Each structure stands twice: as C-alpha cells, then as structure tokens.
Image (tube, helix red, strand yellow):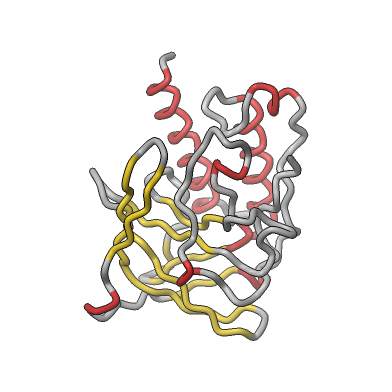
Length: 207
C-alpha cells in the first residue's frame, strides 16, 4: 500500500472509532474506554501512526485522565458577529499557510468557570470543523501546545444531539507534534486558551 492510501486508510479507521462512539449503547465511561483501547491499537500497529517505528516498539499505551462526566457538554453553537468572524492564517512547515475561519462560538462552565471557545472551519477543499484548546494542565500534565477536541477532516467528530454539538473532553487528544518533531501542527490560538484545568482526555506523552 502506498503512503497516500495508508493515510486514507488511517483516516477511515479513525472515522470508524468515532462512529462506534456515536452509535454505542454502552454507558459513556464504557464507550470511552473501548475507544481508548482501539485507539491504542491503531497507534501501535498502523503505518501512518503518529509514532515512529522506534516508539511503536516500546509503546504500552497512551495515558489518559479517568473518565469524568463533568467534562461532557452538549451545547449550541453561537453565530459570531461579522466583526469577530474573520480568519487566522497559521504557517506550517510542510503545508504552508493553513487558513482557519471562525465558524462560531461554544460556551460551557468547567469547574465553576465560564468558558467560551471559538469553533473554526479549516478552509480548503471540503473543509472541516476544528476545535483546538489549551488549558491549565498544559505543559505539566498535558501537551504544552494544547489539545484537539474536533477535527472533522480527520474524522474526530462526536456528532450532535438535536441541533446541539457534543463536546466531550474525555476524548480530547494530542496533536501529532506532541509525539515527535516529524510533525508540525496548528495549535490553539490565544482565544482558545481556557482559564481552568480540564483534567479529562489524553495526557502528556511520556517522551
């Protein structure tokens, strides 16, 4: 299988992981645990894993916070006023400028603190929703550049309930650049820096 077909296969498998979460009848903690085990297997075995071959050889699983139902939210997406609906341009080593258009805003309370995050649309062919964030755990407990919650181009999508978006931070995950310097990733802009510790989802990769 050539590299591009391997990438397509990897994305298909990621999509399948999230589809299984959306369709599962298990409890939320049980379906999250099943997701994590399957994701570990994908990291360990797939040619397009973010891990190098050397990392795969000693890989024993990703580290996660225990499932916490307090970090699962089902929220409306607020439209942005025209003056706030511009775009960011993020320079990446291999891909050049990546354009992130502000698509809406989501709000919730975490640890008694009101939080607002910008939901982005990754421009380019087809596009996709993208939600990066950085919180008070970043650097000490989680990756210093922040984590991702949604990236629908890659299949990371927990779906909706009615017309509300599902945001479950127990599925928050590291960008590929958290594992080794081979990767270059768009990271959370200052407007998505959260003033509270979100101890849910993937933790810092030990290397």
